[in-house]
Image (cartoon, rainbow, N blue to C red; front, top):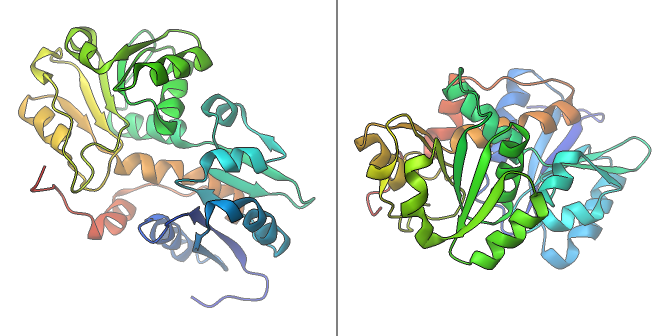
Length: 286
């Protein structure tokens, strides 16, 4: 890759950020489309985040992705945000406009839905019941996207008050439950989604009575390291349809790449294999 003086620049803000697969992902698209540009990791301490964003804007960056722990701070630094970012209460995609304003979007929920539709093209979420594990930022973005598709959402969290607060913020066909309510909720679930860090490499997977799910239920996990979490493996043994977290990672990146580099990229098998090359298939300790 050779950059010119007019190269387009973007990156991913995080603390830490060395683990991020985003530079690998966007680098693949930049090479595929022979774009004069670069996408770089941007390790930024939380107390310097707003200053760093404005400095990179002033240096000519086109924008960037935002990962933990900066997504709420990114929302605050924006001059305007999309409706889905407002619904999520957080921003994962920043776009620096030519006039110096900072626009924010949240593509996590959209990316999750695109991943589902890719895996199950005929899926219609209207009227379906989704049980969402967790009440953090990812849960909020995904729950908001599901509600906008006409689904009913049951939020399950170990801290019920947090789930209740999220449900009040989103409104609509959503209810909050304590973790031990899962047993009663699963028989009516069309979709079970883990938005927690449980199942990430080196951590225990959630232990759930998957035998109580109906045979048509779909089990999804936003964790993508490993690619097949303990939850997904258990669901496969039960004979259920499963959707891993890598697709969400790939699809949520598309709107930002289009805004910064001018091309709407494609998520395909070649990209997935490239990004997944160093991701373990399963976690033997799970």
